[in-house]
Image 1 (cartoon, one colour):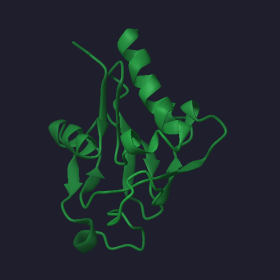
Image 2: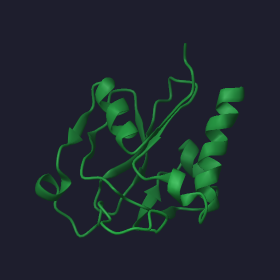
Image 3: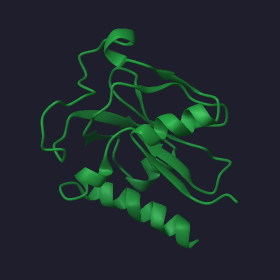
Image 4: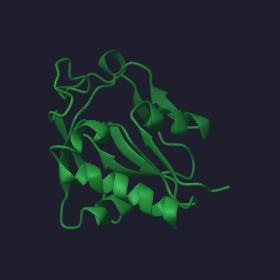
Length: 138
């Protein structure tokens, strides 16, 4: 039916696996890094690390003029290889994929961070939800 889909955290992992992509099952053991992907302390609306926005993607266009943004991070798994037909829209400094989309779909975006916690302190998080709602209306 090509309904809009917006995946968050485990949602990016589920979407990627459903379409045939692979995951890092345990980042600390399989992809060690200095980037803290599993912030262990609250509050959940605190920033953890930055992500680089891939130029030319809808996510980069949504945040025009910005090359990176800070995100929160509460995961130990992540997209390893994107499923065929998916495009990477953001990446952590250690190469972990943080956002993907499926261009063949009307709106299928997914992020590894938690905008549902950040929207109170970062308007870009609300902008993500606005883009999803607008896709639902369209």
